Image 1 (tube, rainbow over the protein chains, first blue to last red):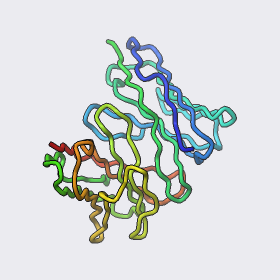
Image 2: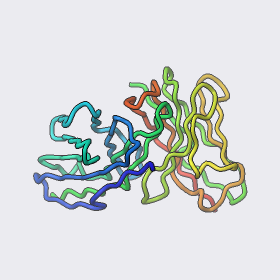
Image 3: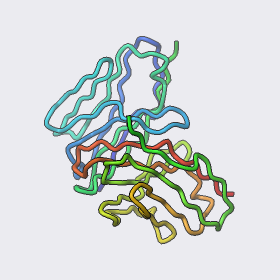
Length: 113
Length: 115
């Protein structure tokens, strides 16, 4: 089936600490796994993505890792700042040419100053 | 930078009424999508649209829903007879191409409240 599981549902960290959010996907996901950040009342915004031909991608304080064998991918935020506080969604792309996004259930990240 | 736009930002309607949500995708994009997000829940796929026809629709997208691209710029979602459970944020998205690694750009959303 088409399913993406995400954990944890909430995550509270102290400013400067790291945050890790984990997702697993079902078999039929394609080779592209984006991560979206959604602030309250706003649109989801792509923050990083990974394609299955690489195992890790980094962009400043944000990194994503992918384990295709285990069907896991994770978001890592280092040196967290209060403005990182938001809901983070992982997603898998399903459907071939349809290219629909199936989202995880979201993680509410709270960075305490 | 080009953006997806949506109107209205907030729509309040009575149960049983028809609503039309409007979107203007990024101009050179070819694939269009509607997603729904009930308050506090995840974003859910509704429908994808390419070459003036529906490519795929989810179980949520029943006979009360329809989509249309009436001209070269707008992409609309119509709900014929709204129900209380249709209350949600509706996001339009577009992508340049349909391959599995093409970023989808989201609009700001329309908050639909059904009373």
